[in-house]
Structure formats: C-alpha cells, structure tokens
Amino acid sequence: MRILLAEDDQMLSKGIHLALSQNGYLVDQVKTGPDADNALTVTPYDLVILDLGLPDLDGLEVLTRLRQRGQPTPVVILTARDGVKDRITGLDLGANDYMTKPFHLDELEARIRALLRKGNWSNQTDIKYNGFAYDIVGRRLAVHGQPVDLSAREVAVLELLLQKVGKVVNKQQITEHLSNWESSISFNAIEIIVHRLRKKLEGSGINIRTIRGLGYILEPPATATGTATAPETAPETATVTPQPEQ
Ligand code: CA
Image (cartoon, rainbow, N blue to C red; front, side, top):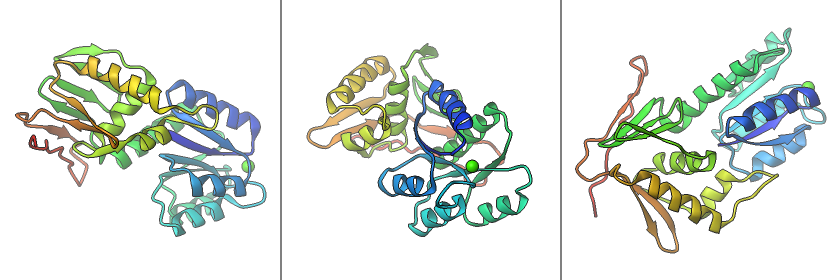
C-alpha cells in the first residue's frame, strides 16, 4: 500500500511516517501543496493524507485538482481544531475522512485501514477458498487453518493479486505498488517474492500463474465455492466469484 503524506509540520510528518512504515505501508512525504499536486499527478497512490494548511498551494486546492482529474484516491484531510468550516468544505470537495489535530496515530491508522478496505475490498473482511483463508482486517493468511507468516512485501503482492482475482497483474503494477521514493523494487525481486508466495500457498488450492511477458494471475480453486463475507450493515455485499479453469 502506497500512501502520500502531505504535511508541512516536520514533527507530525515524521511521526506519521514512522508509524505507517512500521505497519508495512510505503509512505512518500511532501511538504508543500505544489509537491503534493505533482506527486498525485504522476504516481498512483492507494491513499492520501492531506494537511489543509500547506505552503504555496492550499490543501483544499490540491484536493479539488485531484477530483477534477477524476482520481478516486481516498483522502484523509488533517485540520486544525477550529477548522470546522474547512472540514465541511473538504468533505464537500471529495475528502473521505478527516482528523482534527492533535490526534492519536492509532486512530489515524484505523481510519486508513477502514478506507483502504472500503476502496480495495468493497468492505469485505476476509476471503476464503477451500484451504485458503485471508483475514483482510488483520492481514493474516491461514492455509488449512494453520497461520502462515508473510513478509510485508509478500502481503502487498498477495493483496494486489487478491484484489484482481482472475485478472492479469503486470510487474509494472506490482513495482508501483511496492516502491516509494526511498526504495524501488526490481522485476527480479518481484519474481522472488512471487516464488516464495507460491511455496507458502502450496496446498491451499490457490495458484499464482505466470503469464509470460505479461505478469501474474491469481487463480482460485476451480471447484471451490468462493465466499467473501462483509459486515451485515454494508449495503453492497461483495462476492468473490471463482473463475472457471480455462
Ligand atoms: Ca500545515
């Protein structure tokens, strides 16, 4: 998961960056409005944390431009305690959530998790196929009920493939998903991660097929009755339908 953090308060930015990095998110930091606007134009982010009081270009203007470009990227705005008007304007302009400073990092993380779940998983909380069970909330994998340890990068690749079951995910998409400004990942490294992931998924019925020259497809077991559970309050219950074997 790649997040853009646009915040000019150094201390706060550092704290958020540290907390999110420790939880396996890749975070790019910018300190001005124009830098945020540029980054959002060129990089596909999973989420944006946007301070409204940014130098040179207001956070609300960054948000306006983002939505004008038709980008649906979830946005959490950061506002001052007395910024009620800003919060309302921000939500009206297409922000998905807001945090009032000062806030607890734990709460910011929980809100980020909820937004990412909504955006990438249609509010599902887990995915099950035969011997395969992935807990989206806790980001934990179990094969035939046995927990399987995954590295942060393995989690990232598995999630990306699970979000596009039965569809080709190319290496460039994986690279963009797993790189940030501080570290980029090579195609070779991706092959190694997929190789390890395949080994860990052995016996689960889930297959990661290589499509030469194109990328990878995650294939659920052909005989499985794939189910995905969503909270009962969710209006649109998402279902993962296993693709028949070609
Ligand atoms: Ca600020």
